[in-house]
Image 1: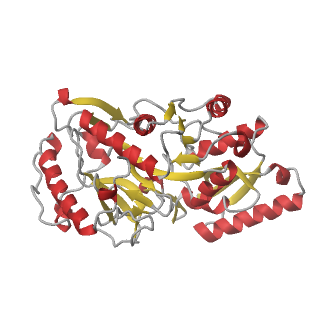
Image 2: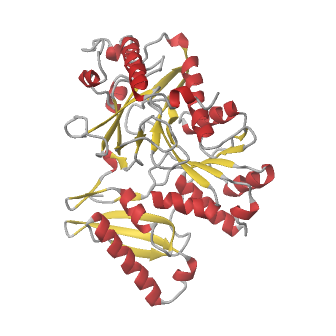
Image 3: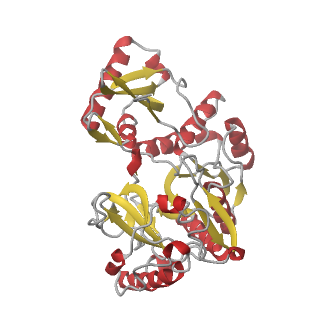
Length: 426
């Protein structure tokens, strides 16, 4: 039931024929929404023809708030999810009962793929409410038959008590919070490898490097799988890593995948980095056409060793609007994380600060270091500081000022980590 082998391993020609049929059904459905009422394209003959359909942007959802994208009667919608809307109208997404059932099946498919079974105890540390992370995985884990603990975020000691008391085996967690939680294990004199039954972490909701993932796996003795989703599509479950951990499979029976040049809007070849564009294929309440996610990635060429034929995307580098420009040099925060987390002696937290000094941008990187190094010799600290500086200079082509700080001295977050403080012109 949860291993949909006919769909996940179907021949490419059959998968493309399915997508073409679903794309045309989606075009017909979308025309029922006010925003798509005057679509210039009513039907496509090939998948390549679909590029004639205009892009949909996040600002379109805000500009046509609240019902501009709803194609069903309001009485058919049973739930809405929403962004925070801190910069204006929120983006609101509607779901019918069928949408929710399909979303649940998608998440169950993802969890089953990495080995979650009904015998597992699933602890969900993500928030419940208008954001999608908590409820999405809650229903998927329940569908599998796992015992679920909908604990939500925060209260780290209580999280650990539940893990130990009920034998938690699978955790859905922010990668930054996983590092914070490990520090609490240490404070309590516990080793999660020995004192819990943890075996699988589901991590996502914020960009993170491969180095950070491997650090989490080593600290906890688990396999950590990368999840991809966004509320405009449904939430978590849009894509997921398989046990090969070599890219995220996007479920192509549910989404049509494109990667475009963010500047020109033209499709880029597989393997070339660009902006991810997604089209829903089976949504009822609110289908979206060629939605520009803002996420930067690439399609990994070739088939995965796991046997699934659905396209894989590379780890999300960040969002197009996450890019930092330092004195004319473009860089992404995840490049900094990737570099420093691979250096022995670096701790579990860091902070990026950008200031204006003498009319120039100045980049500061504050890095927590391991206790034994912080309390060691001055030469040891200086050597580590120089290694971090040189490694960052080689990766981001900017020479930062690296400041080594005591473990536990930088801010921590129960939600998504706020790694960047841009204080220019403030």
